[in-house]
Length: 113
Length: 113
Image 1: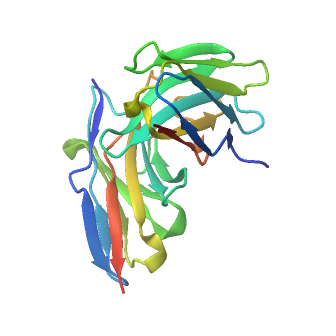
Image 2 (image 1 turned 30 degrees about the vertical axis):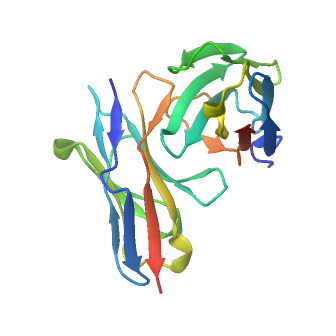
């Protein structure tokens, strides 16, 4: 079956702009989590959605938001981009979250200039 | 708060040598424990996981990990490393009643010919 698909793979944006990233989970998976990966901070949890509801949120400013649709596809949005938002954004899907196995997409590489 | 520590940022081993990557966690109760591997520019792939039961768990690609409650550790091992094992390895935890996965800082593995 198809894996987790993230689009786009690469993105270049200018400071102050906003960006939307997309994640299509594995069929049947209802939990989608988002992570930011940077060389300095490592992998940091952004938020997790399950059945269109945000269940958990990491310690990120309100500029970072997300949503999940009825088909479990998820989007995350970053408004008023800053240079420090440059990172690899990873999406992971799992059946129900928690201890169920998470499958990761290849990520979206965001560069803010 | 739950946390994961990977004490070794970078490890170099010769091909054919044995490998042990360290992981320590801090959590009130035994969390669910995972090891993931990431190749450059790629997402994360699950190597193995521990939920309960036998404290020695087998994973893919010949990896195994041992859970030691007394030491709050979940170290990853491989008897004989192959050049293709060169990658970054992440230990992760999920709390028993939680849905967000926390990652260690990662250990980069270099394999010498």
